[in-house]
Length: 460
Figure (tube, helix red, strand yellow):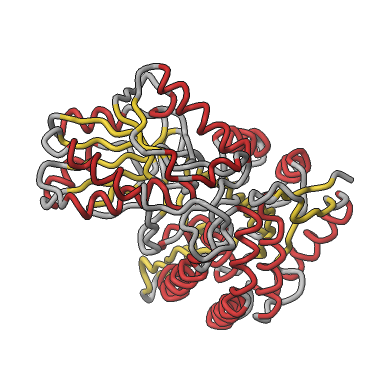
């Protein structure tokens, strides 16, 4: 069977290797999951919630090891403490709304009729998780799926092989019935084959646009529900009345944190021309304070990208932009660790950019951002919408009414005012255009992993 290999971005060494599973083994595991799910869905909701909460607590207990494992697998500095804070916030919120989100919606309960809309689990929810936020992105679907009474099959990215095993361990420690959570080791072809064979009631995929297309092709004709969170090129817009220092701090963090490898990271910024020079100057000064280096060292604020091919794509986009007239602002000499090459990439800010350049159109998913001056809201709206993607948009101003009006014109899934790169579990996580389809978290997250069922009961 093929071998899945995680190459550590720290030094290019092999960090983890796992053999893929035989198809017969996977089918047996999924059959066991269906059997376990039939009993699980009949347990009281409060019991299901309690088990999930215990599993999250167990994961927190493993966090000291998890943080180091993440640094080895995808390069995030240990100083940031991993993802357990976000995992706990999202899991707690989904647990808190479960009663209301899953409760029947009663239309009539009279002497003559009882009419109501119920929600039922879909069976096995298949989560195909990415490497960039390997715990939080997976938890977004795993938690509501289990609370709603489903079984879960998880296929994690090869870059974060160990994460699937840790999640399986945590749910076992939390008391989840055996067989209900299945960690699968699959090739892309095996994944498509299982989806095409109707092995799952719902498929949630987070990854590339091409990956999303492959999932849709695999599911075609099966009528299996599919949720897709794909690429992004999220914009920030700084209006003339913005708090400049706050805008710089948050937008640069949104662009550079996690080596720029964030689904909703800021990849392009439009600044009112009255603030443009000051914004660029302050951004340069801030970014040049970052410490690029080994993510296992506490002083490091910016680790390597997860894989050398990701870093090479960013290098190519920057080189092409510079050849076309863009100007690099950040002094690369301040980042000696970049001399290591490979996955280590210094942050960069580009000006004199335009939308003919790939760095302003294609997903970069790295520590680079382009900044363009604009004269007014209309110009900013036009540029923000000039993208094949639509996940989030960050607007900086003191005028909430203006944000509401601008937001109504932007083709995006979430509109932020004076913040960026955050996922609010009370609001659904969704996108449009090539960013994909579907919704996770919020009450809509429960709707994704359940199906509606109508009851029309005539009493006489």
